[in-house]
Image 1 (spheres, rainbow, N blue to C red):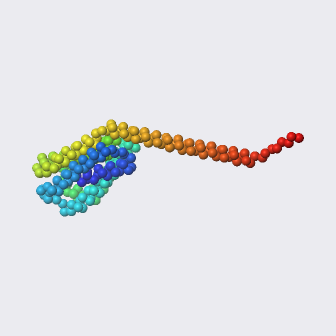
Image 2: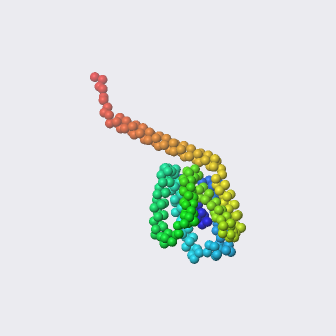
Image 3: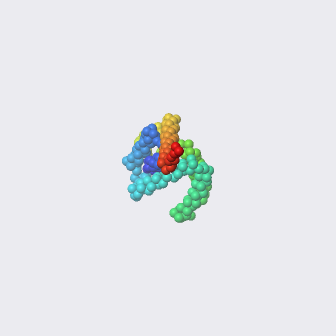
Length: 257
């Protein structure tokens, strides 16, 4: 939850700074509603009576700091992918993600989880979940570039908030755990925020087109003003040179005789 709550403002800031994405009041309102819903979920976890049994950790503050750092890097990754998708080749992005993701993951598992890897009993019950997880990730990362190209990194992160709803369902039906009533209010807020953010796209597009047209007109006016200034400077220089030549030209006096 904290990952989602921190990643969204980071994505908005990075896309605004580096991709020059323009956000209107409607989009900020939608983001604020989504973030409020996630904050509500976090507080429901903190005040839940079964927190110590389910999610209690030895150092929650350290965990929160690590999650914030990871969320920041995740935002950088999403914004970088959006830039590559819109400015470069989507196929190359997917290929490089697969290649370097496999290499980095192999290095990580070799260093950090080699003992756990040795202890795995490679049966069908152990292999099939890995294959299912790999298939899910393949489908996810195959569709993410398309979503980034159409909607952008901000809407992608807002849409990922709905994954928490599946976590609640699994928590209720698979693990038979209690869920605080604030969860459902929070998910309703997230849904409303996503609809608010994604709504009014036509009007936002028209506003962007108007702003771009205004910028283009200002640019043309500036160029024309610069050309007029150069022309005036050139004309003044020519007139000044002509006056100087006229002053330096000797007068010829014709005698009447």
